[in-house]
Image 1 (cartoon, rainbow, N blue to C red):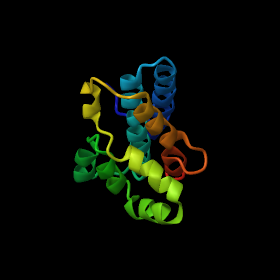
Image 2 (image 1 turned 60 degrees about the horizontal axis):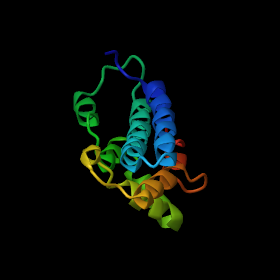
Image 3 (image 1 turned 45 degrees about the vertical axis):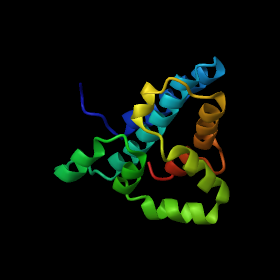
Image 4 (image 1 turned 90 degrees about the vertical axis):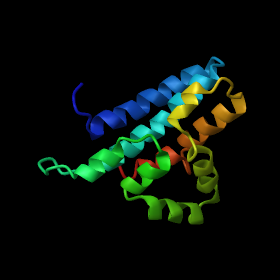
Length: 141
């Protein structure tokens, strides 16, 4: 497998959201929830990738820590924790959207039952044009 770059993560963000929407529209809520969360993970990894200069030797600790699925940890690694806090303070709707997204985990792939409400809430929290998590992350990727 080749090394992923910022453009790859941006592309995967779009692909995973598109796949989540197809699953959501077809009542496959477990898969929709899982893939929507992965879209946020990919967007955060695009933000982290942007911080790496093309010919710089990679920081070993940053590289090691970036191999996580924990969204809160990825926000910290991307250097966006204070920006996220500011966004939450300024925009209540963003705060609600982040609340719907922040606890997603790759372990949800084992969830046997995800309600349509939970899957839809996550998806909409990500794609909201004005205060969505992806709208915010695109400023930094």
